[in-house]
Image 1: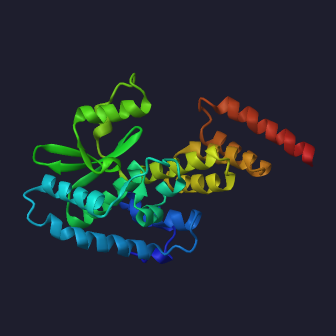
Image 2: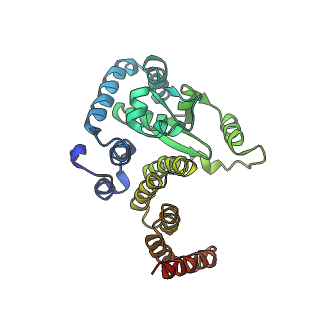
Length: 278
């Protein structure tokens, strides 16, 4: 394992491949985008201490289901982590250093902490990226056991998972059982980034939004939509020439995209604007 303090978000993505760690990437993201004085190793050490504190509570558990329940009890009752209901959109809920400091977070960041500890303690757990509400599953002899970290690790039935999704997206949503499958680590990190992008766009903080989408493109280089989105963000940030370059790149990558004509028209208007400036 490389020294995280000497690493970067980009180098970590390239080094780890599909075995990347959402915790490591989340801490590197926080340092690069919002907390430049952050030492990621300090927070990894804090998580190691938490795992050591939790270990005795899992000893003697008869099976993985019981171990998962014991870990949830430690994390959400003893350690006091909880979902931030009063200020859900606070960006600190998406930065892992702040989640560990404040013990407040979103469904996905609390799940990431649970999953990291579960891995350290030998609990077979996976992230479950349901639309609108991230949870975790623990493998048991009878099948997956679903836990909701945002709600103190409450155990969920399948019907309660359906209710969570419909509560987020509306009662008309038809629940897809595939939503209960495991979410790969790369998709977990992308979802964390998308939460931050949504916040920074909502407050029109274009430089921060650009920084987040830059890292989304590192994480998902095959997603041409990130190039398009960067073009739009640079335009809103006043960088017309850079915006036109990115939109041209997007059109080259996705000439048959449904929005290609609209993007081309927008790019051409940027060219006209640049011509007037010259």
